[in-house]
Length: 383
Ligand code: COS
Image (cartoon, rainbow, N blue to C red; front, side, top):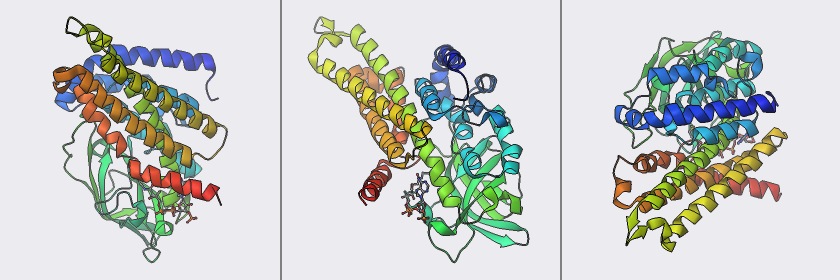
């Protein structure tokens, strides 16, 4: 454990109060304005949220998976846009360096990411390569001591405010598939990088994505993560294993929030002369949501324990992401149903969460990709 149990409990307590007192009251404003207020971002920095998973040696809190998922469940109780502010720094935007970077690369970027001074972002997806990540076409061709990058990356979270990108690119154009791919750490100010227009999304307003376009973008040789070619796809997959567990934990937190909203509404709303919570058909919806959220939580905590025990979690993380993201979709649907007409009106948080949670089944690997990973791992285990 990187921090002692008492300090961790204090952290959870502080973050719980932050979610209740600062994030929840600002949710509607963030959705309407498509922007997280600067004052909240500054508080997130002060609370250490940008460095939750970055090792202590580089200025972070170095939380283990079991601690990280408990924090993620807590943060999941408010709009996902808030977590997204620092989500790439503690996940896909920093972990490539954490797992495979050289000491010099870690020293150069991780302390700034941990403090929130540097925003990290992860460039894997392309216009023609989404689920089939190994088919990516962006190239990084050797030129003297460095590389020249060309290609377009799509739907890149936090790209509009990123300072550094972890970029997966084909360094060996003659090797198709995963083996020809390398990972690079590229500073956003490098000439030859252009950002596309911010995309208009269905939900998660306040979290921004856009294209990142590389046009003859020259990077030094030491931008190659780990300074080893051909490892970039594996780096990306390792990063996604942890990322998927984190997203699953967020889904559990969001489900808890939706259940809380549903329960409160069902107890207050009266029809046929009584609170609708007294009707068994409404109770069935509440019971299904509660049971499924508890099952997802147990799955997430078990996978986190396995990771902290040093076990591989490729299958477990995929199972968590698959089950928890589908689960929160069903919970959000029931929450809207319990609210009736009110659930379709934006004055009630469930309308916003219904749109927000839809993304969980898509990013960091669709449900169908998680199914594929689970089945592949089962077949491997069976020999
Ligand atoms: N950890 C470490 N290594 C891994 C790994 C993991 N979780 N998953 C795969 N690898 C390795 C494999 O062992 C293989 O190595 P070898 O060539 O040495 O055998 C290599 O990576 C290629 O793996 P694989 O053959 O499984 O690649 P595929 O192209 O068949 O499929 C999937 C990989 C479909 C699982 C992958 O493309 C994927 O996850 N797609 C979804 C991408 C995604 O999540 N995008 C979201 C956007 S990023 S926010």
